[in-house]
Image 1 (cartoon, helix red, strand yellow):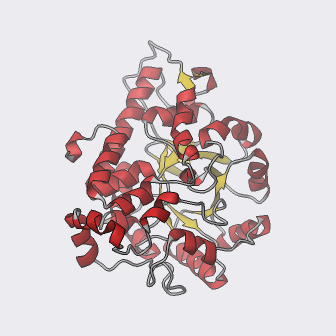
Image 2: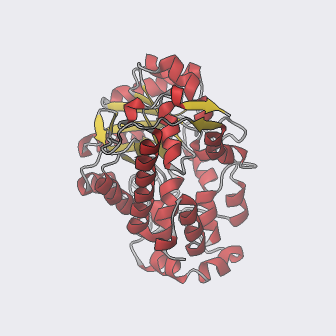
Image 3: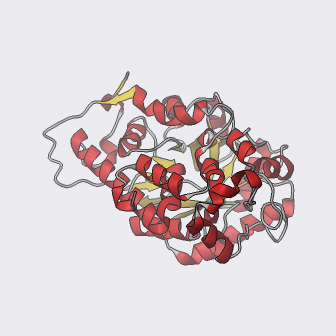
Length: 382
């Protein structure tokens, strides 16, 4: 299977599965407990049908929008995800360059494998930094100050990861960061020589935005669950979020809001945006899908704060459904991680080309020439 054989995100997932050792693939692909929420995140889009209009004169269309004060060529963001150089040696650099080429917002994680400063210097694309609040207050302050100095456009505080979800695939495989060649997975690593050679002989794996403060996950191998459960601040509350917004001083987003009550609190503390998200189903299994919650949150706070639907997006029509429901934009992580793992920057660009084509084709078939024309009159609950 070649990259040119990939015609949708599902194809890229299959190619990634072929090219990655299974513990690494399962880290991307897996989620919490029975993975019910992970599946629901995408399936939720199937519960709502599109109702197209015709004869609308769609020779010229405009797919652009404004997200958190910056123009985006598509109503799609690349969500921040951790450990990207584990999946492909190009890591965040590949995603950043692909985002620049397509004119999109993209985010990097606190657990990024490239420095804040390098990403800032690499591209002019709107950049989001995703902050995990650590028990080490000095580390939190350092990351905020570095993002401010580097000119990041927004900060997203992740609020749904007080403790780690139970990711059973990772427990079975023994996946750690940095990856360890465990006996149970040795054959999988050995039969993926291209990945193994890149990992062993290219730039040493590290988490450079953390390694001045902690060794876990960057100098010492730990599971993601162990990292989250020992390093993150379980005392984080709304006062913490308000203080971080103030310390940051720029465009501020809360990532992981799922209830109307929390959306209202986000407005009260002065957040500019919320990402309606359940962390890709990787935290609380059995929780609702972001798309399921979108309408009631938009009805409660739409117009006061930007609402981004994060998670489960695999098709351009998913993006259009989120917009019609009232979202400012849609976003996702796995949609480009599969592509990154499959073929680096070329893979991410392939994924974005496919999604761009699907969004444009979907708009023409819906009879709209700009995304502002999408509304709930074009949706029907199944």
